[in-house]
Length: 126
Image (cartoon, rainbow, N blue to C red):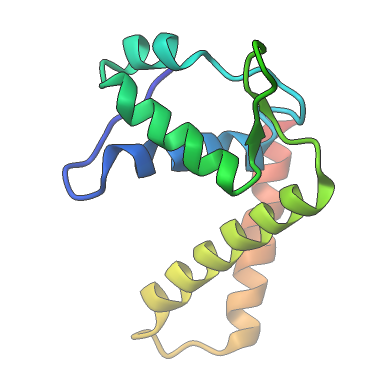
């Protein structure tokens, strides 16, 4: 597990973002077992209470669930997963739009560049 923390955001939020990225990208499938809180704290060299807070927040957001005496698992609820993907996309688009705002470029050119880049990335993955 390779996570590098920045100094400006709370660590529990960064842990949550890490798992959200894994879920959105499909690296963590619905129903996948999450690492135990203690195991994750040891791997990341952070306080177990920080991991507990991240897991509690993810449970509140229904991204993971924990049954009594069982490991936590990634949600299998399609509506929660779709909402997470929409939020991730919205954030990415907002960041992108803010970054290109100073550039005077027609929307059609932007769309073309995005399509081209996505096509190239799909080829590279094959």
